[in-house]
Image (cartoon, rainbow, N blue to C red; front, side, top):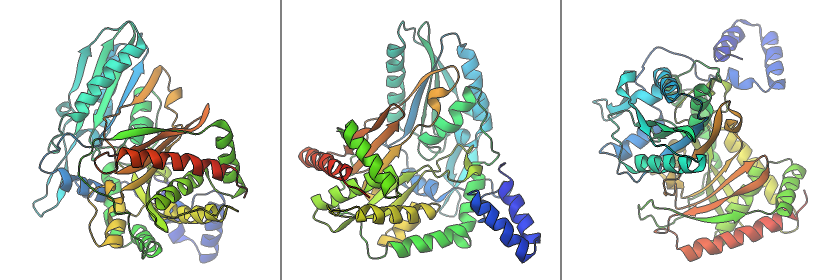
Length: 456
């Protein structure tokens, strides 16, 4: 369906009789398309300088200048050496012209808030670098080092906060590095919106960041997001985030998490037998481990989502990622999978209200306005295959590790078609001692093994 489907359907529904409206609603439900009727974003011409709640919170945190130690997003994409570097540069320039997020800056609106200023495409330079290399792996490493340096160099938010380089590393490869401040776009958007376009793969959709911001602001006052926010805060009433030290130092460390084949198969079986998902099972393991370590009956875990559950948002290059807050009980029952059922239901409810901005949920929960996602302190992320491995002419895509940890304590896992979950426990040594992180990781391995032996 096109990005205008939601608006078209809502207009049609308004003109139908109650009986026909009920019939159409039932058919949409069967096809999983009811989201087209809930007042989602549409293309609008009004208020082009609107920002989302997340962009506003990030701007308030960095309005005086990014300190160069922030969790930016970055990637390195390799193309076959036969591709002309100038062709890659032209494709990048077309992307800059097409995506407002790559040429937007953030300035005060005169009323204590922030607005977007969209620059001309020529204001966003695409740097050309010649770094001949005989080996693709060496070329990727060199590009990655440049990207890390770009990410650790402070951004000015009154200029477009994105850095683009085309590296001529022939005969090994031609590479592109993209580094952006979180306020502009997220890693998922870079991979699923920007890169396909550079490889000649069309991504359908006509919405822009301004459309999403307009809808969010309007809906926070009266609409679906306001309703979701009310349900989210009611569901989390009485819960409190884990009180971890917060030094403000973002330097991170990582401990590998290895899930062997037998454990992975057992976790998959548990997910299927409980009518759940692998994510819910991993959330139960991680949350209960952290709760047990801190002797808490439950813990709140922040779960990152792409924010693109609506088809009409598939082609929007922006930071649409949102953090869901999920209540996870400690000490899962050893004799059954009741805890998995509970986590499944908690996670399903959170996903159903996934448009409610984390900043507003956190404020209602704690009475203190959230500045960044790190305020939830404990997080879980699970990345799955996003299609970049099959892009035509693409030699590979690598995320850039800037050496920072998103929060004090997080479990970061990925699933690839050729293997089960793998990843790391990421933490900030200034907040969580290494010995504690190592013991937590050991407890997590034991918890995962125990859960893999459960039945639904």
